[in-house]
Length: 113
Length: 110
Image (tube, chains in turn red, green):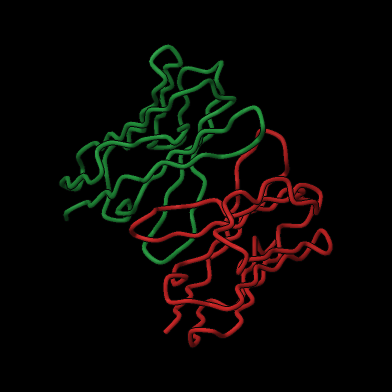
């Protein structure tokens, strides 16, 4: 398996634009997590899905952020409109479910100017 | 807060020495996991230790868990330059959520 795949790896966008980040979890994994990492706040959980259903989105900063998981092999995190403070590295991770370890993608480095 | 806390925040040692990092947490866990993150990359899982386990080994890594003190330690023996990275502990609770610490930045000097 290729592991968790995220795209794009880097994204530079202007303030106010819509940004869509994509994630393909490991086949057979039934839990998917979106994280944001910054120097100031460390690793923050934004939302997690179990069997494609959002379980906890309390970490989503505000209504500008939305996430979907239309099927077991694909998820998106959308920011609309984007702001400079959204600049961060966004990670997607998946697990087999239950009390198991997480597998991370390489991340998307987002810069909003 | 359930968040794990690691110490030290940063550690710089000579190649060949052992490195020890600690993690503390506040409430009962199902398991505790250690991850490594190289600069600019995703996190990579190292070891998972369950709440009924006290010690686990993987190569040069040794993890201990003391549930009475709500703490864990990660020992890297005979460190190498390639071990330079940030190390994170994450605690997993009964609701399957992983709560992350702020990480320890380890630098191995050649």
